[in-house]
Image: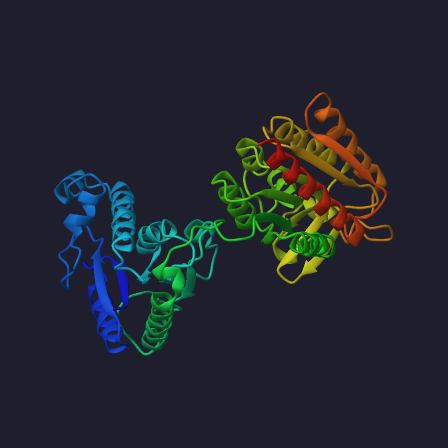
Length: 417
């Protein structure tokens, strides 16, 4: 039997969750309703009552009510919902999860969803879904659906949207329940081919694609992460879990965003996990010649006086300056010099992106030299190896050379084990 878990506050959204449950039963799935409400009385019964959710977080519902701290209570119920969903999944009673809500309900349910393994269907219908959803999605595979109107009753706008959500999660859950992965769980990285992580942006695609194709020829499975902030954080998370045989980190624009206030930063820990885990890594400096912002009309005042390029209607970039490039070189070196595993840095001396190629709008040999010089100085005396290539990062020969170097490092590490 296919089971869909509903997670929500049944004191404020009980009518809506009752409607969802009825529609899911009609769609041919069983329903487990988890109540994460706190104050008011639930409007529909739940298979997992709120008292059980609070206990799963190590407290009693009465204590949360007595404290009268909504923020702390939401955090606690999110913790309990997380523990509850993990238990249901371990028991084979969760083939998909659906939730609806505003900011509070989305916060609770999305935390619980993020704890579930990749591939488990997760659908969040939220009034927050048309803005920045990174705090809710994180590095998980949650599907966000915008509710258009607030989750407040079933009406002519909300009914078709919620009906679509029901059919979507029912279909996904049924397929997941049928899949061999559900019957015989296979942890990420335990298949026949070793996994490689690669970082890529649109402006480094040609070089990274060449590297990916070469690594595939050599017998690896390559997972490519878009350097969108979330992509870099996901790469770091999985590298820290030890699922990769190697990391081909050719695109580091998230580090430039972190330094210069761009919108796609992956945070200060970007480029640390592989080194801490001792995983062989080949690193380059792709896209450190730019900082990414949103649409042109959202660009802050200061960058407007710099070299601005509209990458697409959603992304505007500015060229990093010579001083910024020097600082980026120092930051990259500081992260790589403490790596505990084999580390190589490949420098494409003729440009770091499609924009930075000779003749491109961001071609700036002086700024690139400042980047390379600071990196060389920062890595002096470390175990990291530096390799110069008289080519552009998007030359396919560069990508293949980086892939071959990573393959050799992985082989050497295996032979020494």
